[in-house]
Length: 555
Ligand code: SF4
Image (tube, rainbow, N blue to C red; front, side, top):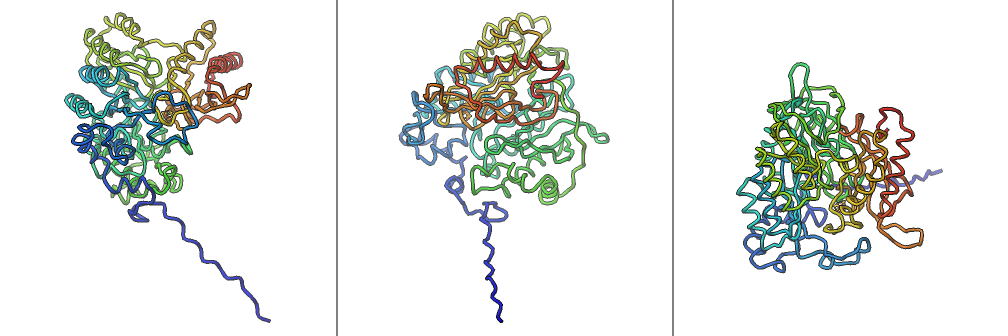
């Protein structure tokens, strides 16, 4: 009897992921084609020579919706377009003829001269808008393309720029806002931030990455740069034999498939930090996935490789040497937002000021520059918590300065909610937004704080409240005690209204005393935007009634 065998079907070759080192450089989607056909950095010449001269209608759509980002420019949302139901609109219907312009501030370090220039640009060219972002940038709105070359000229005259403020590039480098001034600093990251910026920002070798690439560097024990959600992070640590240096983290990121970064277990010295940045960023450029945009961040490669393989490739293929190993350092015990008044290592003081969810204005920034200088201070920092630190104040000036800053709406001693509330751009200007964020949060915080006034002493030590205008995570909702993600929801009357999906219990090191963890989506728990104060009040009062002494909110 002859035996019949089932033919073995040949194994289908796995689809290429668009990894340059493995699959070659052929573009696998429209965005990769756009990037391959002309480097995003090259659009600057066209903006200066053609688009700013001939106006908005002269802009090539591929530049408008692609390469403009490489210079910090996005079209803003057309006014009056309601949230949701925008899928049927063409880009022309959804977008305005004006731009958001992101000013890149590596390490958040500004002089009062630079602050004044940003303030004046805002009042002259951006209808007095200015938002401090949670990545230490300043965003302006209502910018007309014809004014962009003059804005660049003014920014660059004081050492500021918008290079690679958006796009598939190394974005702004988050840096400890107290770098070089904190009494308890482990190591000052200022030289590393400057070196990375000098060598690699605006460098065509690193201006076509698979996706955005976020860097954070801090030498402060509070770990004040939300390092767990960055692609590359260096956190100050002391090696028992080699002294102060950094602990390397890679592969953090939110939005789709949120994932906290992981330690590679290596010690990086100050001198080799920029080379290590180059090595990790080169891995991302060469091995990162480019086929699907929503699987392109470094976190997906790390998830497939694991930390052991990632470290081996870094050391063997890119650095040509092994890095020393190091065990984890201690967890921070204080919030990393630097709110309030603190003594610097030189005996002067810095003051952490909180505006309402990062919202300021050109007028306010100019007034702050005047205020600082009138108190003998010429330096400030922006922070990843949408705050401003005023540096170098004499102790005798503090009381007067704090009072005058309060009159500008910048609070040194904010209430629990105002201190930790952050909100993304939202429906005012963002084309992806579904709901309003800034004004909703400002109003909600005021209302909640007044309702909780008689609960002083029973409230948690820290409570983060983050509000996003859509399912993306620009305001880091998964890392907040109370995270709200904008969406349309159906109210009791069956109407579609602005609301939020609730996330609970997220935390990052540096804001709570404990391990970082991502918050959980509470299925079915949605809150109408105008009922946000009721919901938060209920949750906080419930916490106050049941928490044990010293128990954090996230616990
Ligand atoms: Fe826009 Fe959404 Fe980001 Fe908010 S979270 S800024 S609405 S993309």
